[in-house]
Amino acid sequence: MKLIIVSELVGTPGDQYVPAEGINVEALLEGGFIKQEKPTKEK
Amino acid sequence: MATSTYLTNPVVTVNSVALTGFCTSAEMMRVQESIDTTAFGQSSREYSSGLANNECTMTLFLTYAAAEVYATLKSLVGTRTTVTLKPTSAATSATNPVLTLTGAYLESLPVLTGSVGEMSQIDITFTGGVYTEVVV
Image (cartoon, rainbow over all chains, first blue to last red; front, side, top):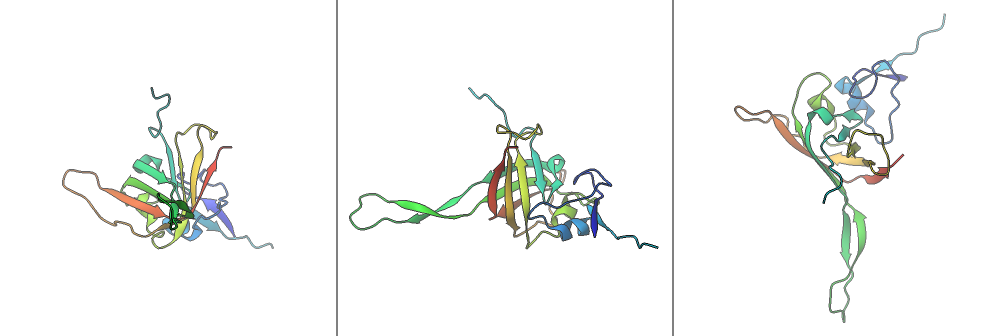
């Protein structure tokens, strides 16, 4: 699942978020700083 | 005479969130615990290096707006994360290193504090973690 930046405090909104070592991704999701992009189904 | 002035425009991140605009004070402390190795016959104390026990403290304005300070910290209590400080916002270099604590633990968070006529501020402390210094 791809992580996308929502808040400019984390990076450029819309860019993919790649967590560095030790980053608590769950906390970023709960805080609304990033979101998960669900993979689109192929037809 | 001082040749440089630091911490007037530092970069502060907690769990990769840039909190510089909410932070009024920050300090990262490298601590290497000492172990007393003094033996009989010695006339002065002697110490050896023990475990690292680093610490990072900061003062932040407490804001509850979406994706700001409270949203950054509320889910970090009781967990480990990464905290970075950089002396200035200029490019990272040997004279402007990124100081990082990886795996630093946030034990407590004041969830509401304030006084009449004052901005609400909180002091938080991250303890432990591995200290690194990035210069490139």
